[in-house]
Length: 153
Image 1 (cartoon, rainbow, N blue to C red):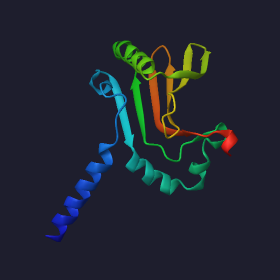
Image 2 (cartoon, rainbow, N blue to C red):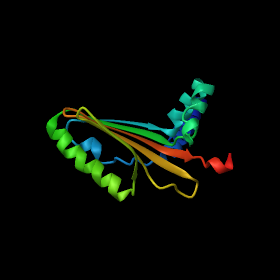
Image 3 (cartoon, rainbow, N blue to C red):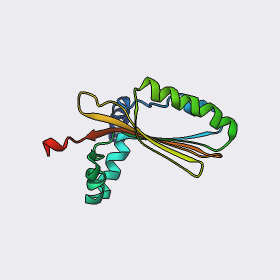
Image 4 (cartoon, rainbow, N blue to C red):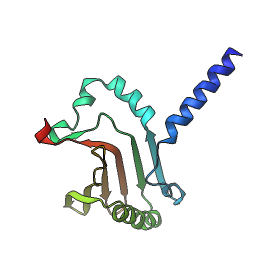
């Protein structure tokens, strides 16, 4: 009976900790040939605890705090038909999310773009990294980055 209650408590805790997580790329996993990875806040917190001080300092020199990330989503496509379907999907997410270009680099046929979404009331933003090559299309989304204001430091 004790094992049952502990299992039930664990299941309820995991359910409620995952309820707040909203995937930005909800429909991408149904595109044939697109590989998807989603890492929620619970697993990120576990990883941050073991990474220690090095992780806490990552990104601070750029005015970005990644210590309280909410989620990471990764999409990858290598087949032409999957890339042809994924690219307009990402373009739509960028447009609907009001993402703006922070940095863009085009070198030897490889286009890399970093976007940021507008900050919310908690001064949190999303960073979207898109890498396009002839035979590969990769997307990484970091949800819940805290944008630091240098005047407040």
